[in-house]
Image (cartoon, rainbow, N blue to C red):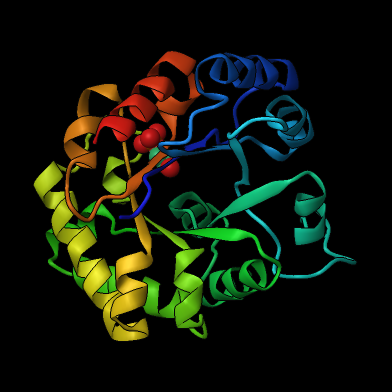
Length: 253
Ligand code: PGA
């Protein structure tokens, strides 16, 4: 049985004060909860403050990006050691917004995935097709290329640590969610591909999150699908009640 994992991607939102308040609200409901892995990914400016709030709890901390370098002259970048110092355990890599706006390539994302695994940080590798790609019927090709590229050189044993987030770009922040059937179909495809890349054991162990307008109202149906092991939540993670509703749905799924 794969444990469900619900991660909140706060993106470029929240001041330190607001971040501490949101983390504090979640602590009241979920500090001791162990049925589901709960991960908060605040912006870097709030990481230390949120780390202090959740430090004695079951709530885990994530980052929204990481450099593939160890340190040095890389203006504006954040290295693995800086994240680990703040007790960050997970790192979102290859989010579609970084692929689109910063031009991150599969090769660069692959270097980050390998670095994160080497340093015992758990990558949340994001993949997903745009609307044009889905309409052109190239969805599976796109997702396969992102996975093959992003996962090059990953050892089969690492798939217990690695999380994949399937996020159809057309569903992110748009209010349009993939139907549970649409999402399940792609998740099953991803799991089959992991089987080809790394063997049956890895395919069975790897957790695959769905992301794209997940909210309390649609979470139960999505999380009830056999190959959907959690959610990567943007908008609905900015509010404790809605993020909590998704955690509740995951613990009942
Ligand atoms: P959304 O974002 O929940 O606001 O659609 C998901 C994501 O980008 O991770």
